[in-house]
Image 1 (cartoon, rainbow, N blue to C red):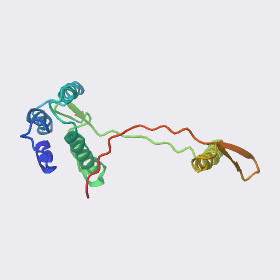
Image 2: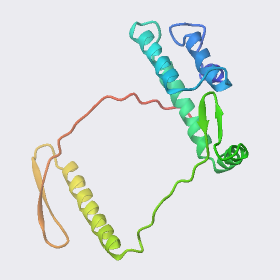
Image 3: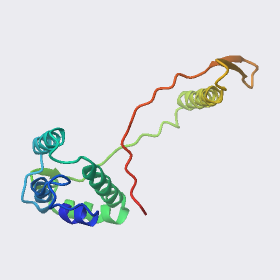
Image 4: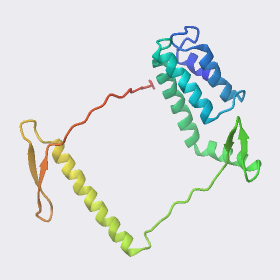
Length: 182
């Protein structure tokens, strides 16, 4: 399947610089059930890919594209309610402990969420938190709007409090953004 995905993306697996056939085959073996899916196997695969990239044997760029594509496919699939219902039913058919596939344990578990809105003090605190977050957002918006020629500005809250807002410190970093066409 991974080979199909890479070919579908236009990644030519015959040119070793772009996508080494051996690495693609190892990932495909996990999906097909021929290779154990474990954290240590993933770490080994990552280590080998990293080595090949650092030594200039392969380009990392096709892997970013393939990773984004696979992420889109599987994120959509695992969030689909009908698919989750079928998967849950199948998992439950194996019994209480779920089942194992390629070394990975697959089970349906219950997740709990708690609603504290029946406790008056909690509701009061939640309201205060919302007010504080709104004030924080107003300060952030004011700070971002400070012209370059100024170092600070002042805002006045609804209750008349004057707040000095300094120009924010900007921190930047480079990320790799992968955008798939529609």
